[in-house]
Image 1 (cartoon, one colour):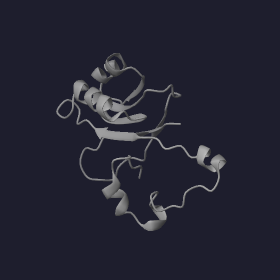
Image 2: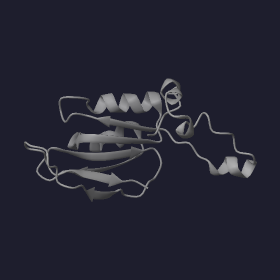
Image 3: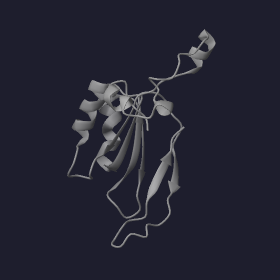
Length: 134
């Protein structure tokens, strides 16, 4: 779980050994400089029925994440850098109008798509993918 700077309530509910607030501060300046916190936001856009491009652009402008992970992102989200700058990679899902996308204001390497195991759930569950972002 990655928490943002604004999730103090969430952090207080985490077990103490996993709670970054409860960890002792680094003892040296060198140790402090090695630790970098990043703000990551994730949003399932629900294809064309949930959030639209302007909703995501507004969230980026107000929350200023270091990285934004988007699920069910349609082709229109390829215009996101035009609105807010930064870099976007989108991985379409075969046979679907949506896919996964990652946006960052910083240059990042192209994510590596990872095919996930086929779901054994009953019904029509599409083949699933993930992205490895480094």
